[in-house]
Structure formats: structure tokens, C-alpha cells
Image 1: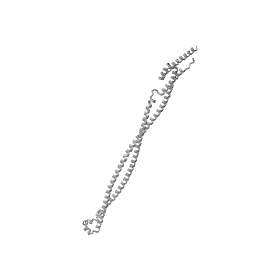
Image 2: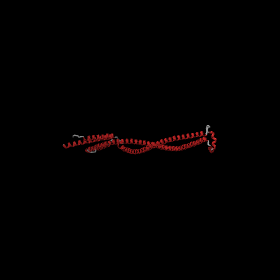
Image 3: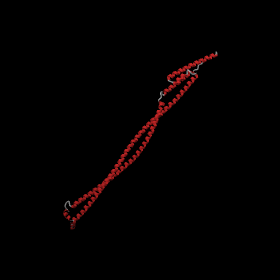
Image 4: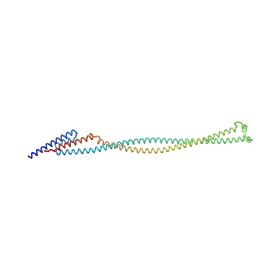
Length: 322
């Protein structure tokens, strides 16, 4: 009868569904074991006890979830790759900048120390020149006073000798009795007038000595004055140059100290940026690098999970004609 035929057909379909459910469940259990997939194992365990429609829905839901997870993980992988690359570049750049800034600070410090030593040297040299000029001036003044006195004494000696010679010549030429009366002692020298080494000759030698002393002292004074003027001119010129060099060096040193200060600020800022980049790298490590299974393996496993679900779905979806 028709009822019996329909009943047999339904029974056949039911048996085929039970058989399909069993095969799908076995397939998923096998693949779950091979892949170590809890998701596949969970679905495989639920297939035998559930209606066909619910099993299909279960597989479709899991398929959708796995595809969403795969898409999300691919997005995360792309984000990780981008962040890791940018972070590595930043850490490298900031490390290089910090190294260069440290080297610049060391260079500034060496230049500042060198300029400081040169400034001290210039200050000492100027002090030495000032002292030398003071000593030269004191020596020149003393020498000038001594020479002036010597020249004056020589001039006075010449004048005295010349007066004496005039007096003697008048005495010898006139032999006036009045002179003899005034200076009786002169009579004893009357016979020395023409003798070698006479008084007048001796006085003339003395006059020559005084003249030579005066001339030599005047020449010496002139030479010493010129030498002093030359020394003072050179010393003043040298001191001025050293003073100008000192002033310029102090300006340069101030500038170098300012630039070193700015460079230290730049270094602190760069080190802070580097510290932030290193901290961010520590955050990226567990999220992007330190995973139990690498990304390629996870992608491959998920593909296999999806493929197993598709195969199970195909088994369940087969249509039989009764």
C-alpha cells in the first residue's frame, strides 16, 4: 500500500541520515584528534544525539566562527607586522640618535675643557706681561734717574775742570803777584807748566774722562730708552692680542656650554622616546611574538578545521533518491 511505501521510504532516509551523521561524526573526531582541535571534537560529540537540521546549523555556525577568527587573526597579524616594523625602525633610529648626541656631548665637553685651559693660560700670560712691564718700567725709571744723575755729575765735573783750567792758564800767563798773594801755594806749581803731565794736562785728561762718561751715559740712556719703548710696545701689543683671544674664547666657550646644555636636553628627550619605544616593544612581544604556535601553523590548522567541517557538511548534505 501507499502508506507502507512512504513509511519504508522514510525509514530508508532516516537510516541514511543516521549513517551520514555517524560518518560525519567519525570524520570530525578523527580530524579533531589529528589537529588537536577542541572545536571539531565538540561538534563531533554532539552530532549523534542531535537532529539533522541542528547538526547542519551547528556546523554552519562553527564554520562561520572559524572564518571570522581567521579574518580577525589575519588583521591582527597585519597589525602586528606593521607595529613591529615601525617599532624596530623607531628603536633603531632613537638608539642611533642617542649615541650621536652622547658623542656630541663628549666633543663639547672636550672643547669646553680645552678652551677653559687656554683661557687660564692667556690670563696667566697677560698677568706675566703686566708684571714684566711693571718691572721694566721700575728698572727704566731707576736707570734713567741714575743716568740723569751721572750725566749731571759729569757735566758739573766738566764745567768745574774747565773753570780750573781757565784759572790756571790765566795764572801761568800772568804770574801776577796778586794771584800769588791770594794763592801762595800756586807758586810751587810754576815749574810744572811745561813739564810732561802737568796740572793742566792732567785736568784736560780728567775733562776728557768726564766728557766720555757723559757721552757714553747719554748714548746708553738713549739706547736703553729705545729698548724700553720697543719692549713696551711689543708687550702691550701682545697683551692686547691675548686679551682679545681670551674675550673671543670666553664667548665661544659660553656658546659651546649653551649648545652642550641643549644637546643634553635633546638626549634626555631622545632617551625618553627610546624608553617608550622599548616599553611598547615589551607590550608587542606577548601579543605578536611570544605565541605558543606560530602564525603560519595556526593558519594552516584553521584551514584544515574548515576543510574538515566542509567535508562533514558535504556528507550530511548528500541527497538520496528513494
